Image (cartoon, rainbow, N blue to C red):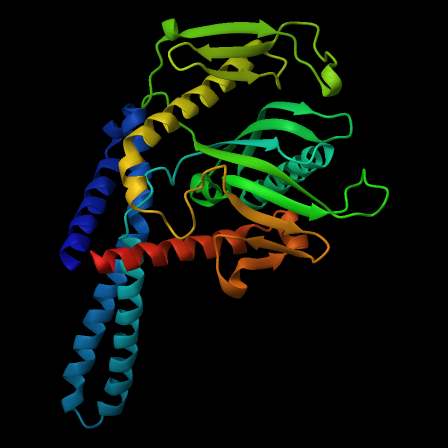
Length: 356
């Protein structure tokens, strides 16, 4: 492990030197790649250097054991250094686990009302509000690409971009079927109803990584429409792009500018095609190993929001750790759930590494 850490430390120093070279700033793509790699390596390097310092402190303290006047202080220092080394060793094991290559990416999210009629659409709107509040709390930027609303304020479907540090690493666990149990506002008899909405989370693909042949695209323009199909724009600013080889269709109508709608639609299309290519490449690996926290397939029931009992249950977790206060979660307090899922995922990977 230490040899691998030394190699990482050397690479970090090499990147730092490159970033200090003015010539690097003449190549924006190189600058972006180096900055991203440096940020990914930094926590590993910091822990490795702290481990080296603890190791040096241990050696210095052991040299003082022969001095009667310093022996007691040296023993305390030895215990402290050993404890630091053990803690850092475990931390480094986690940091050296294979990284999700998409963790530093922005994301594309889609929410669709599922089983449950109008109540499902209202729940989809609640989920969107939850993600808006979570993005604000994390300092991320959220932009709506397209939406289809109901007359009661529900969402048939909505697509949006989330940009910011760690967006994919935190939001990737949201992909799947979300179930709600509550008395709908449309229910006059006070009966509890179960409804569902699906959430899809895709890593945003960058143009330099996934090129699309313009000849493979069919681009149509149409008028934007609001709730109940009402036209909200007299000009044909909405965009529909069809990728002819795959049949993937993307629409964007949230902006009044046709150019902006086309730009956002292309981002969504690129991400969908990128995800499809990744799924094809990873199919064999995914079949062999399934994480404790689930695959994130949108057909899975990953979470239940039980309003009468005031709790949210994440079905990928076990024991008491799977239940969370609904008021906090529905108002954007997703970090405790995400932290628990991340810990479970790391534990599964550590166990797998120990078996191999």
